[in-house]
Image 1 (cartoon, rainbow, N blue to C red):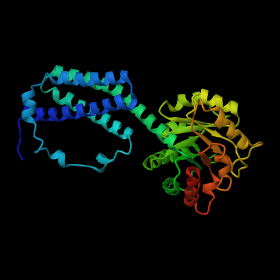
Image 2 (cartoon, rainbow, N blue to C red):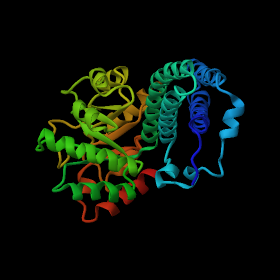
Image 3 (cartoon, rainbow, N blue to C red):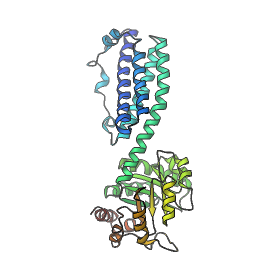
Length: 355
């Protein structure tokens, strides 16, 4: 082990951090260009990259290159499992944004030992990057949720369970069996218990590439990091729920007639629940919209399509009546939760939906 002089150490750190920052900025810029097709955001990303290059031009390029010692960098052999864990584009953007922000801070601090004006320019760039990358991250997260919602066919309502361990196992096992969306609905649970389960469920579901929604409580959905909130006709309107959970989260709305469907779509709902289709052991209604309602929704929302989940008393025996209406997405409770083998029931329902 040898000790280099202070200036060479600073230049070695600056060189490595400059490379990391530039790579991270470019990674985000490519997503903005090719993923979002957003020319304005792409222009900002390009400006950040050019501003970094302009600031770095104040440093002695020869000294930067002379200080570089990739073969001797002990950090190149230190790896973690998380470095290779990117399940979706949103994870790539988050990692890139964090890399840029950290690298810019390092450039700013060590740059003070070489050129104070360079450090000032990097500080200004760092704050701009915070703002820009926050917006891009939110876009990426929203895009990821919308993609998973569009692919979803099987939606399950669950309660808090008898324990957190049971709750976690339910999500993991049923996700493996084909459940795409989990909604936490438990009218008997306290706010604290709902929050704790929602916080836990959001993490577990994300790891399973499933969506996790909270029933009614937009505040809990937002604070717990859930993918969204589902509201009924007696709860917050979709627009108000959106103000609570933000544009990056999903808002679902229960509908019982075609007017409510149109209102939900106009109000900005990301998806709708349509029913009740059949009598249910989970929730009682004075009347049932039935399959006629499903046919009406299928016909009248062709110009304003939203993912629509048929709900209410649906099971393996009557599912064919639902799919005959043009519905290939369902939300269920008892059909899976009350089955002797919930995982087998989920797999069977999914096969019918996709068949």
